[in-house]
Image 1 (cartoon, helix red, strand yellow):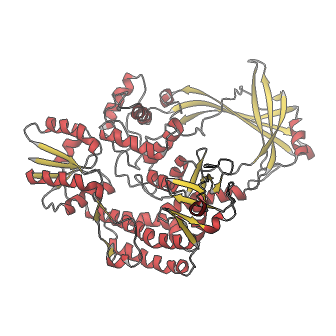
Image 2: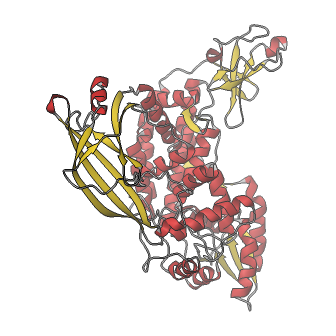
Image 3: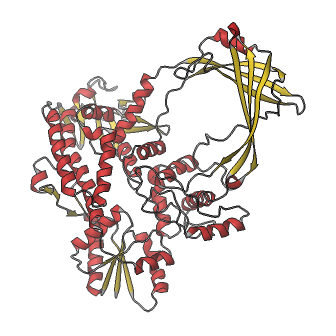
Length: 635
C-alpha cells in the first residue's frame, strides 16, 4: 500500500479519485497533516530560555501542537500499513518545512518528496515521476525565519510589556508593518497644504460642435520643476482671460497599451479588496479553497508569468471567445525580491468559466481567470493627438497650453478586461476630442476657467495597499502578507477606520520604544534579512551564522530597554490595564477613574476601577484608545 501525506484536508476530495485514475492498479491512502504539526512555544519565555530549552544553543526545540494530535495518530496508523511513503505538502518554503517536521516527528526513514503547483492529473503525474528528498536548505531558511521571529517575540515583547504596562508585542516583521503605517501617518500630520491655481481653456470645434480643453503649462515660464505651483490668483485670472492662441504643433500618434500581468499573491489581495471589498486574509483563505479543489494553480507566488504549456489551452479558449491572443507567451517583469518559484495564479482548466463551490469562491475564480486570460491577449491600440498652443502673456512672457485627446482604435485585451477587476487605471489616455489642427492657425478661446487647487497629503494605507507596500519594500513573502496585516490589526497595534489604517495608541507607544533602539525596525534591515533567508535556501549562507549574528546584535540593543523602569500597572481579571492611562477619565456613574482593559484581537474597553469595591459595573467602548463617554454600558 502506498501512502501520500498532504497538508490541507481540503485536497482529499480531489486527490482520492485522481489517484485511482492515475494508478488504477495500486492501492493508495491519502492523509492530511492539517498544516504544521510542531512549532516553537509561543508564550511564557524569558531570556534564560534562549539557551536552556526553547532555543538550545540557538537551535530550536519544538513541541507538538495540541491540535495536531489527531492528525499525527492518523499518519502514524497509516505508516504501519504503508510500503511506500510520499510527502506531498505544499510547494513552498512552509510546505517543505511541514514535510520535514512530519518526517522527523514520525521517524520516517524511507520516503519520497513530491510537489505539484496545481492539483491536476498532469501535474500530479509529473510529480510522481520526479520524486526527490526534502530540500534541507529550504527547511533551514524557514526554520531561521521562525527562530528570528521568536527571538524578537521572546526577548523584546517581555521588555515592552514591563515598560509600558500594556499587552503589546513586538515582531521582526510585524513591528515594521506597524512602523510603515505610523510613518505614513506622520507624513499626513506634518503635511503642509499648498494652495495653487491652474487654468483650462475650452475651445469649440465648429465642424462637430464638440468642446475640447487645453491645460496651462506653467513650467518653466511661471514655475519650476521643484515647485510647479502658481500661487498668484491675479496671474491665473489674467491667463484665464486669454482670448486667442496660435497652434504651435499638432501631432498624431499610435499608443499601444499592454494588459496587466496575471495575479501574484499580493496583486490578488489588492484586486479582491477593490473589486470584492475583501480583506487580504479572506482572499487568501478563499484562494486556498480553490487551490484545494484543483481549479487554480498555487496561490502563494510572486512570479507574474504563466507556464509555457498554458498557452495552448489559453489560445483555444480565446479563439472561442472571439479574442486575439499573442503568439508567444507574454513575459512580465518580476519584482527584485521575487523568488519566482511558482507560476502566476491561473485556472487549471481554462475552458471553465465558473468554478468553486460557493458564491465567494466563484467570484474570486472569475477574477483570476479573466485576469490570466487578458494577460496574453493583444495590446489595446489608441489614436492619440497632442496639440501645443501659444499665446502672449503678462510681461510679454509666453503662455503655453497643451491638449491631448485619444480614441481607442483596437480593443485587444480591453475587450475582456474593462479595468473593473483591480488597479486604478492611471494610464488610460484622456478622451478629449481634439480636432486636427494646422500649425500657425489662430484659435478663438470659447471660455477660460481658473482652477483653484491644493496639494493633497499622501493617502492612508488600506489593508490591500499596505500589502502592496510590504511587497515593494521586500518585507515578507507571498505567504506572509495577509497574516502580517491580520496580526497587527488583530492586536490593536493598527486600527482600521472606514477601511483606512491608522496607528492605534498601543502601536504608537510600542514604536516609540523601538524606534532608534532596534535595527530590526529599519526597512532596509528587514529587507536585507529576507535576502539572507533566501541565501540560506540557496545554500549560500548557514542557519547558525544568520541566527547567531542576529541574536548577538539583538542582545546588544536590548540593553537600553532593560535599563528602563517598569510601568506601574494593575491587573483586572485577564486584562492588563494601565493605572496612569485611566486616571484622566472618570466613571459617569460613581466618579471613580476608568481603566482600559485589553485582550488583543478580542476585547478593548474602558471599565470602572471601583468594580471590586463598590460593584460599579459601568464600561465604555474604546475608540482609538479613548473611552466613548456617549455610549455607557451598565448605567
